[in-house]
Length: 176
Image 1 (cartoon, rainbow, N blue to C red):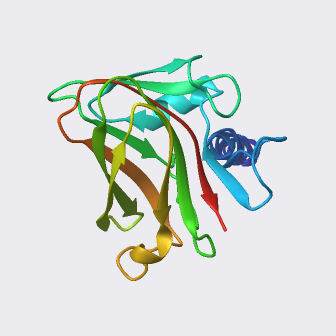
Image 2: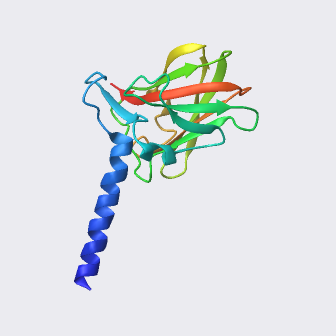
Image 3: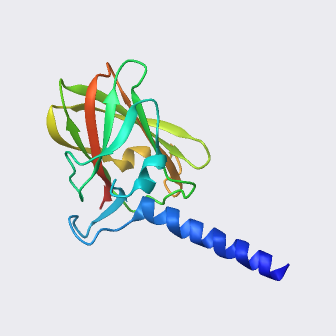
């Protein structure tokens, strides 16, 4: 019986170690020391953490960190992408800005961001216009204080108005 418990404890620890780096992996380079990478799409383990209604796959085009990005194909009824922290809510206290690199193919696009905490509280935070080409979206985290628990951020969801065409996401990160 002791061996069985020990095996389960080790298995749980290994699973936690395998999933946590997918959310909080720190790169060797490419980001400033005042940034913390949340999502980069270098590993296939990241794809199951991306949900929503938009068709999605890893792509080699328009990567800003590493060699891959997340390609979204938007259309009516297929307008959301959800990034889940994999059961390990993240502590965003002490961070000032959320940054997301986005490449847009096609016409400008309006997107809304909803942030959820581990207790299920949700807050629609910001609306941004994504221009064709390369963009870095920035979101001031101070606007969320008191609305959700910043010590336990569990999910990010982007919703596109009038969804159409392709969007690529990469290097989703926090900055001081």
